[in-house]
Length: 391
Image (cartoon, rainbow, N blue to C red; front, side, top):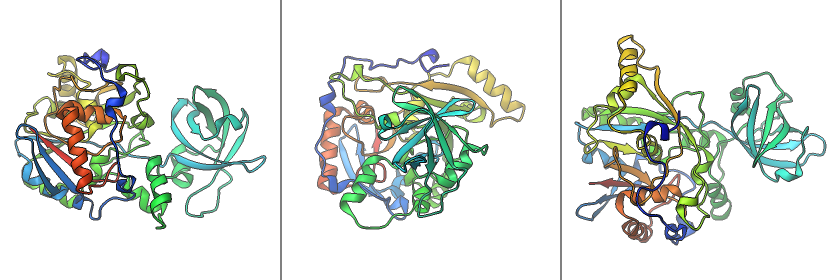
């Protein structure tokens, strides 16, 4: 089923927006190449929408702004090491790529850099990270093009997750990889990246993400324990983050931007908890959580609530009660049904994520906040600092 089938509009609710309105200047030195240590010591700009008051705190201080009568809503998706480096068997030509998802029972889709230089039938040897020895069984074969991607199959009969765990790499966004090359000679290891580009509440899933829900990266077990100590309950939902989240808006108008689809799931137990939340008191963690929530109507349709209740009463609260795809576009003019408090990062210009946050606080106001953040030397993007948006 699609989000539209669930009854939510997938386009801006009022008017339209020029893509150029989502531009802002950024000092490239502010692009974070690694997270803060400890993670919850990242800086946090607190913005009170009604009074326009701004505070400069740390993420660890978020507990002071929580109401135990609300819920903490997080995206529990797990990032898989889907990025790869490979060499063509016949001539050693090296390339990079990214596994996108399953295309058929025995085939996957993959983006491959310089794809026009490769051909159907080519075999590529995956090159493991950190100087490890390549395994002969970790090869892929190219079958055919599907738009910008290749259909590929794995030569080994191993589960693909075993292969990319062994020979894949953390799918860090390109701007982090580029910033590392330009700004620092520090050495980074794959083992560290796999840990740091993963939330502490990520759980195993057959829907691996190729990007992290980055606001969730700020949480530590200690911070989650402090939040639980207030009596605030955590609700986990799952949105499979795809590469489209980084796709820049190139169309003159936002309405012409081709929105990407992302799979969403909610368990029976968590769906029932969602049906009871007070959104004025609850904190949504990250734009991916917002995208999932705002893709479903409120109140939750009776048929889904009934399914969830039946499964919970049968002792199957972890079973999926809602499974759908969303391509929702949230922009200024959108009417939020679930989101009133949001913890988020500082986002890329010309991105749908920037449009989403602009819908919550106002785009002009958001640009002012981003200018202040730069003056205060906040760190931007996936490994950067946070913004807590309050009523």
